[in-house]
Length: 154
Image 1 (cartoon, rainbow, N blue to C red):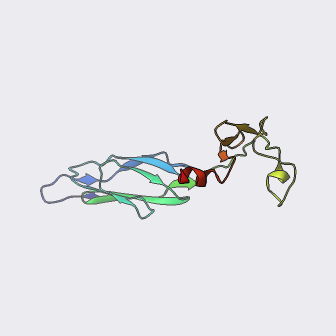
Image 2: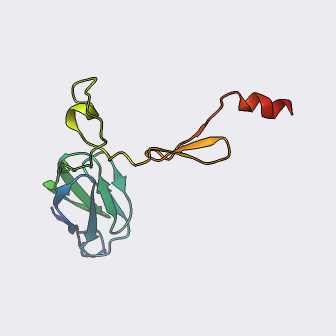
Image 3: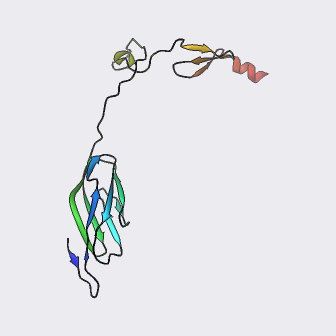
C-alpha cells in the first residue's frame, strides 16, 4: 500500500473493506471503496479470476477457498491476502414420510430406507371419463389403451 504524488495532483491512497469476510458458498460480499484522494477510476480483482470496475461492487463467490482481494483506485492499489474465506454449505438431514414400499429391490432404495410419502386410500380413482387418477403421483391413466385409435378413427 502506498501513496502516489503526481505533478500537481493530490495524493491517492487505496483502501477498502468487504463484508462479510466469510461464509458458505455461494457467498455474496459487498466491497466498499474507502480510498482517499482524487480517485477517478477503480479496478477490483476478487481472487477468483473475476474483476470489476465499479466503485463499490458486490461479488458472489461460488466455490470454496480462501481469496486475496485487490482494490485499485486510480494510481494506487491495496492487496488484502487471504481476505475472503468461503466454506462449503452445511448439509442437514431431511426426514421424509414413508412411501409404504416394504420390499428392497436394491440396497438403499425406498424399500430399504422406508422414506417418501404414505400410500393414499384409495390408491386409484375412476374419473368416469375413461381415465383413472393415481392418487399417489397425481398422474392420470387411460383405462383402455386402444381408445386413442377409436377417437382418431371417428
